[in-house]
Picture 1 (spheres, rainbow, N blue to C red):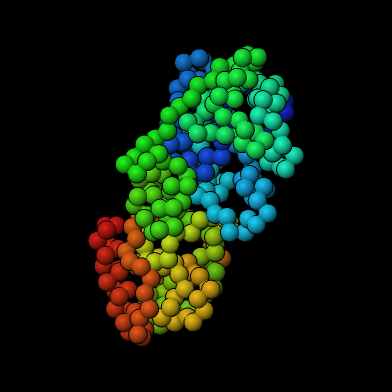
Picture 2 (spheres, helix red, strand yellow):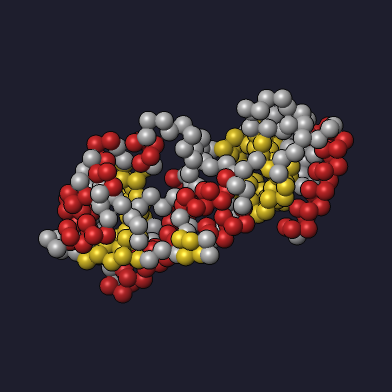
Length: 309
């Protein structure tokens, strides 16, 4: 996949394109991308994904500190590459760009700059100024432009149409396995190991505290999880705790992410680590003392090994 910063000086072959935010690049997105790739092969042309950076909500919403997303830009690029797309066009999203009317975007950029010949969009996609661009808008504008538009239905489950917001809700409720099913891959967080209070060592379960690489990366619900840990080229098993550590901490506003890597005892401060969520074991709980906490962590370890092995 060739990555283009912006849409100037492109030389694409009769592009079959789609556009969107693609947060999570979930199964619904994959159905859309698969159609783009297949259509491009049929037409002997090139498949193109157009997306925006930073996320439009970070630009348009004044209070965006609490916004959270399924994927960072780097993660999204990796996932789109796995979809076998030929080209990825990254358009810088600014307040000025957000005010471009939908038909002007189609005429001046999509067709004029990118050269799109065939556009595939999702069932509920909106773009352009105030989100005025939808399938009907595109179809109307296409009458005066030399390109064809196709709408693809979404990916349905028993809970409804798969969407990024549906998956975000599942993760925020701790429904890891459900979210993973809808994503089509296990949810993961990458970050740097930072120094903590080293209380885990006192009870035989040393933990590594993780600072996520992006402040807007969605953190699942508080609780204890069975995870896989990727460190350099090595994958290990672990159990991860998200929360306020109520047994040893009185500050309810303090929230940590810490992982106990099973059968591992090395200093890894400053290293980059990825935790891959597999199953939620239990909710966070306050124990009467450290002994009770250690006993529970022993049970958590056995359940983790039973699930991951």
